[in-house]
Image (cartoon, rainbow, N blue to C red; front, side, top):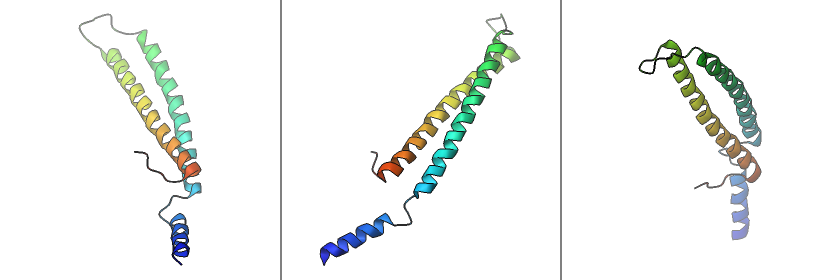
Length: 107
């Protein structure tokens, strides 16, 4: 009798509505993968802007003009995109792992 109850509880946990569905995890992976592609395209655009604007950089070392400031800001954006890509990659990998091996403690 105790074994039967244990198995019933285990089945209940697997079907618990608090677990994320495979379809929803797949949807998250799909959407975030599309976002990664979009960010990659925009990162290439930013790199292109930086390269072009470098041709117009001020020769003055003591001051920055609008071009110098714009290049600095574009470089910051590129760094933020890199950080965002790392975080999105983590989410994608976690969702794939969740679908493959269900919920588990990471740390």
